[in-house]
View: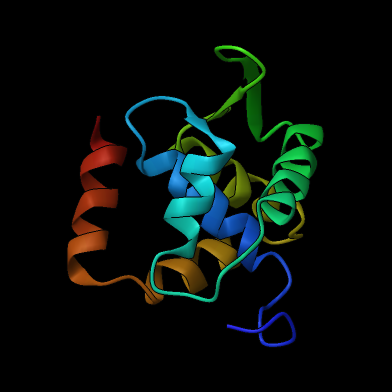
Amino acid sequence: MSKRGRQQGELENQVMDALWSAKGSLTSQDILDKVNQGSAELALTTILTVLSRLVDKGMVNRTQGTGRSLNFSAAETRERHSANLMLSLLGDTENPALTFAQFTSSLTPKQLAALRETLEK
């Protein structure tokens, strides 16, 4: 996908997906390889810029690797991140009950069952 065709935040999402799907931390080159699979070739500097922004946002942890390399990992799980986004959106509404009603009306039966099971715990 070209630069123009890429939606704002899409590259950040791709980087986060790579980190969330990893079993441990990744180098910038590992992330580049994962993001470039099946898409236009991005430069390592692009990935490093995105990683730097994600570190600044507190979404990614950066640690020293071997030699001069850096390792990157997600600061929180995908599920915790999604929950935080939902809580943030819920905090912006004046009518939480209506927001919940709208949200649950869009859930699949399987998702509703999972929500009921979680609420019963």
